[in-house]
Amino acid sequence: MEHQKMLAKFKELYGADGDIRMYFAPGRVNLIGEHTDYNGGHVFPCALTIGTYAVARKRDDEKLRFYSMNFEKNGVVETSLSDFHPKEDKNWTAYPKGVMWAFTERGMKVEKGLDLLIRGNIPAGSGLSSSASLEVLTGFLLKDLFGFSVTNEDLAKIGQFSENQYNGMNCGIMDQFASAMGKKDHAIFLDTATLEFTYAPVALKDASVVVTNSNVKHSLVASAYNERRTECETALAELQSVTDIKTLGDLTEEAFEKSKDAIKDPVRQKRAKHAVYENQRTVRAVEALKNNDIKLFGELMNQSHVSLRDDYEVSCPEIDVLVEEAWKVPGVIGSRITGGGFGGCTVSIVENGAIDAFQKAVGEAYEKRTGKQADFYVVEIGDGPHRIPV
Ligand code: GLA
Image (cartoon, rainbow, N blue to C red; front, side, top):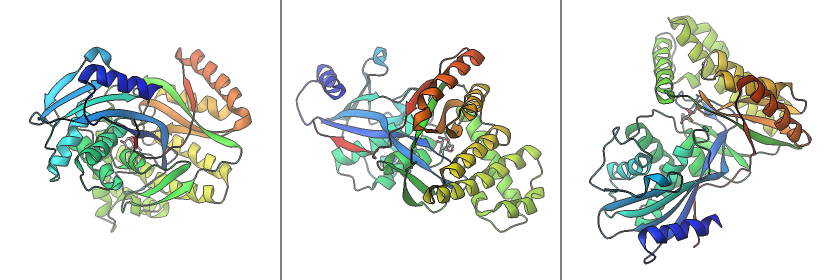
């Protein structure tokens, strides 16, 4: 249905002739391993069945035409392949443009323009990686339309590169990797220091993964995020004066406790502590899942939240309310903030029989305590990017 609507809109805007193709790339939710991906640590995200769709057609000239069904009042945005402005382009087209620019920077020149129509079904500002899905989607359709020889892993790297260099957000690799490498019913256990990874089945016995959207998006997310990243880099440099490590992910908790006094600022020390402990927690959590110890997995999720709230300070009052209320509900195995933070979503593991009660209790308490509405999604874990036959 939705596919047909997209196709009809594309034809109405740009005409029905030529080789018109349709694509999809997913968003992601991270189960555990937060703010570890730029610290050489582990992450454990999975791709969702929601994400971003594109209808695309190659042009004969250098024109680029963009249209988003999420921002219909913007109409068709027209630009060209000679009109790239890293770190200056600001609206949503800066994401696909950034990826086209990144391909060219990497020696894969995009020679012809495109007509593009985009539609996303990830709630805006929810922290479920709508930007990464748009980046991976763009990379995937460029590969398909122009025949570039790139793997899905390359698409993840190109997406991160463009987000860092074109959009000015110094993100790690997790979101793009999760979108590009997603696998149905599996989470990706990724070592961000080496990019080695394994797929782990998300088999939760009688429980499900539930995402709760706080519907809060704080401004200055990018600047606060970049600030955390700098704090970790400084802490690493201080630690390197007393211990031989490449990243914070190289440290065990014990090794960190022994050398932490090298970090002169107490705030920075807390940031580094989170990065070290969260990485170790992630390794343990994946082990617990393998052993079918869902209870331990949930406890580690809860600890992750406390660390992100108190040491890394990337939560916010609304998200803390969602997590606190979730922890009170019988049948909730674990609950934490997910993604970059400062708003967005929580991720919880909830026994199937308790999901309705969970939504009711958390939803009502959230509204009472914050005056805001929360939205709930029972997560379906999906595949990476693909072409959709039209
Ligand atoms: C954002 C970034 C990721 C990662 C998370 C926090 O989603 O894009 O690279 O750092 O925050 O875990």
